[in-house]
Length: 234
Image 1 (cartoon, rainbow, N blue to C red):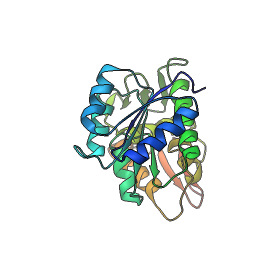
Image 2 (cartoon, rainbow, N blue to C red):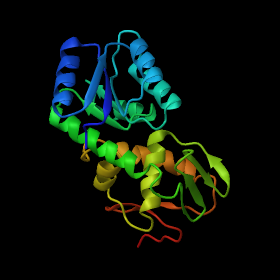
Image 3 (cartoon, rainbow, N blue to C red):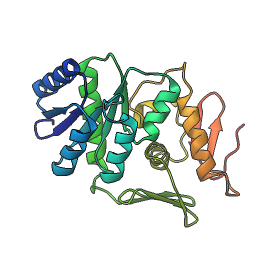
């Protein structure tokens, strides 16, 4: 699936950049590596890339800020962040900046390639092959414009909040475990030592449910979460 895909790697460490470029090229991707945010923005503005892979630590910019700029300019381009930092707060910050996935160094190139393929499949699946609108109860999501409304009231979500709500809208009235959410929305195995799923559920509830009489997102004790209109936790 990868022979026609172009990947931009943004990594200031020449050795790491070379390893990534070689490994991804050997897997059939068309890869360009740049070493700073300035060159990265030039490339993104002048050429079409299917995936952007960026380090958080860059010599001329914060990788999180670069991620936000790319996400604002080109919302349909998948972004994978690379970092030596790996605690819950760091991951939440990366996802809030607009990253689709997050890899902690060191990692194997095979893992990165698997993440890339998963993200590309997901973006292709949601790119015009089905209706642009999905809804449940009072919530309406427009996949094309990346907007959400409840009772016609606009609700502003971060990219990861949007992705999380989208998964619930595609699986209404079904209990979703933390492990399933982690794998399907974040493309990573759930780490029981972190609570980032619960952090994001709180974020989402505050926006989707807090100002409305009927609550739609519910916790099922010991099992996970569910999107349901009439819910009673027995």
